[in-house]
Image (cartoon, rainbow over all chains, first blue to last red; front, side):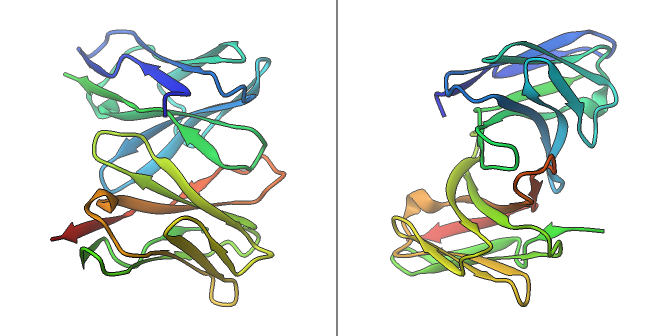
Length: 112
Length: 113
């Protein structure tokens, strides 16, 4: 969905490195989310934000941090990447709390 | 615990036939359900949604059925096309709360020619 963009689309990094994944949206939605997707495990919520001043941990927030720089921007950081953080990462947005979420194209991350 | 799951991991359907993808949910408090389609290398794409006060909703070539008695959700795709090949998964949530969207792991739909 071109309304939600993620950069980079692919990233290879080494254990211990700090990396940032960025998400931007033009949908005008207040709520933004970060998920990771692993084979056989489906989508798991890392962090979510209901507005610029609101940040909440999801089910697997350990090892991650986020920053909501503006309504349209929500970035995810891995402070010290480890191999089991190798996954597909998706950003999503929604209009309402508890409503349908719209996803970006994803970032494929490989941690060596 | 609460769970959202799919009965079949892989569904193979011939082009032109109808497809039915099933989903079971266990949280009786969930009142909003969404079907997503995820093609290889892409993010999940919203297909159709349904609220718990409905038992059927139709879109373009897709129909979602909700049976709250047995906590079952299905996605029907009419006249399945090769472009329908993807992973489909359902999600549930309690609207108006901070509850997270709970996703199933997905069913892969393979369309054969």
